[in-house]
Amino acid sequence: MSGMSATPLLKVRDLRVQFGAQTVVQGIDLDIVAGEKVALVGESGSGKTVSALAILRLLDDARISGSVQFDGRELGNLTARQMRSLRGKDIAMIFQEPMTALNPLHPVGRQIAEVLELHEALPRRAAWSRAVELLAQMGIADPVRRALNYPHQLSGGQRQRVMIAMALACRPRLLLADEPTTALDVTVRRQILDLLDALQAEYGLALLFITHDLNLVRRYAHRVAVMQQGRVVEAGAVETVFTAPQHPYTRMLLQSRPRRLVQAPAGRTEQACVLRARKLDVRFAQNSGFWRKRWHPVLQDISLDLPAAQTLGVVGESGSGKSTLALTLLGLLRRQGGTLDLLGSDPATLTPRALRPLRAQAQIVFQDPFSSLSPRRTVAQIVEEGLEIHRPALSSAQRQQRAQDMLAEVGLPLTHAEMQRYPHAFSGGQRQRVAIARALILEPKILILDEPTSALDVSVQQQVLEILADLQRRHGLAYVLISHDLAVIAALAHRVMVLHEGKVVEEGPVDAVLRAPQQPYTQALLAASDIPV
Picture 1 (cartoon, rainbow, N blue to C red):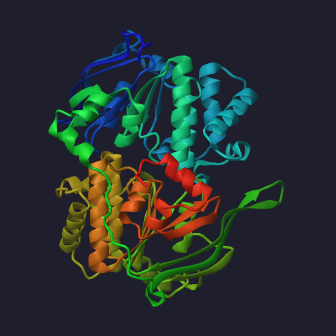
Picture 2: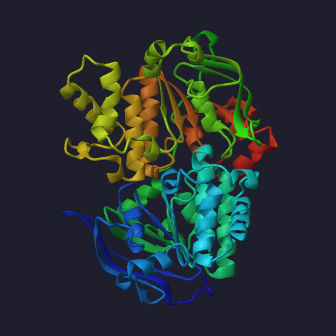
Picture 3: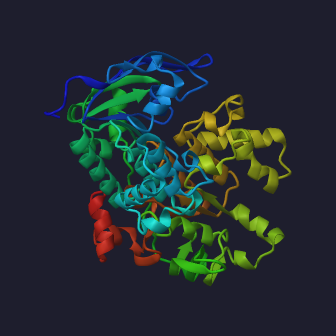
């Protein structure tokens, strides 16, 4: 920080945000100078994302007061047209949920190119070439082909990298990054952070980094501000705050870290398996000229066994096939080869009527809670929906009570009035807990968890992991836990499978694989992670 200017590029004073009668940001002050990385941390719902959106004046239904100055200009005095010119060029934002931030009707390459055409007046062909280059810089394999893909054709981590490429396209002076590495595996995370470091060194990029990953803050940020219930309760240099935190809330956050919650199984009993797969093969069809299709392999020769009351962890880089495996195991994607036994049945051979009882026993928590929760249904309707279908004998009052109890179990106690709100009214971490409650309310035997804690802050992450471990002990639940966070895998999994480019490169007990990995790819994942080995 020695070479940084003392004049703030971004100067925020007494910023307040009010929705109706509720004040959610209560007078925060913040300075960021050119070339500085400032982290904003706090639990889900503390006001971090709302503060960033208020800075960019992206909250139409809120009352915003206070002063926000960028390079000496008061943003509150700018016209809507001036703000549009500023956004994307001088100030860019990486949104928390890329699936909802990206346009589903356009290829991702076109969306990146559009930013360059609007703000830098690049010709269409040049903008497309630059978009492909940016995708390659983000570590996306085969960027020419991926640029033609639509958002739903990419994995969560790949969509996140597209969002980052779009934000960095015009080399902004200030970047507001809302959980930019949440869906990224550890190796790509390091690659993206190294790229941001290079841009800072070259262009003096200033960064407001909103995250719940305290290890990332410790390694990456210069200063940190800790938010609780809409207020900044502590701020200062990262080393000072992390070494000697003054506020009890900061100390609580620093002490929250996933810890081992399950014991190694005494032995693997073949008869106890609730899920068994042999030589699964999944390919996606892609157009390759008029009336021609080219088949792209996504999963190849995947075999696994999952006994009752155990957890199989699945790790690997973004795009390695983890989410595709989850959907295939539930029969939600058609496979081209292999056999599957899910609670004694193969979903591919069942009629829709015969499949319905199986769906209640095998549930999934999807990676992106915002896109998996209906925006037209209240939280009460979302959580109770499974009971309406599979437990029709329950009364409306009984369904409501069960939904409230389940939400409280996953760390989201809501009143009856709060349960009538829609998903957009909740933070990303709160939506993730709604998704978990919806899956657990039917008391399934198998639960597939696709990045279940990626949007959760550290304290709630540990709380949810403890809930999952307790439910497993009490009800004999079997989990397939998909995560890029090896600390989460170490906390909850009994066995771990490492995927790379659709193939299993290593598999075995968690302790054996994480302490003494045999394959170079697994060794690289561990080297880039923050867990002790």
